[in-house]
Image (cartoon, rainbow, N blue to C red; front, side):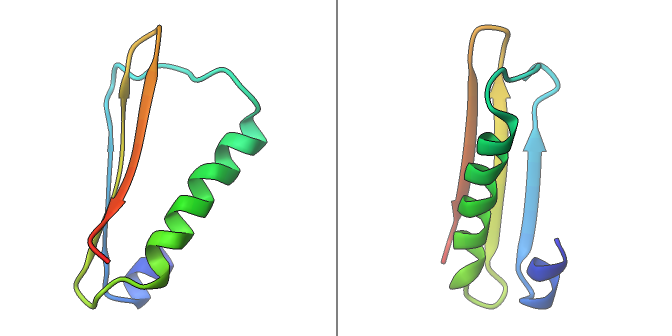
Length: 69
């Protein structure tokens, strides 16, 4: 959030209450999400927007990182 604020980029986080728990290698899952967010913060236009969205249920999860940069 602090890097996004410095670059004047809106970072929106939308996590559905129904998403539940994801089973897997927590370190690797975090690493993947961190890399996607870092990449999104590399070249955003001033006033750009980055979205981290998670949804799903007990059978599956969908994690989306999108940006306009």
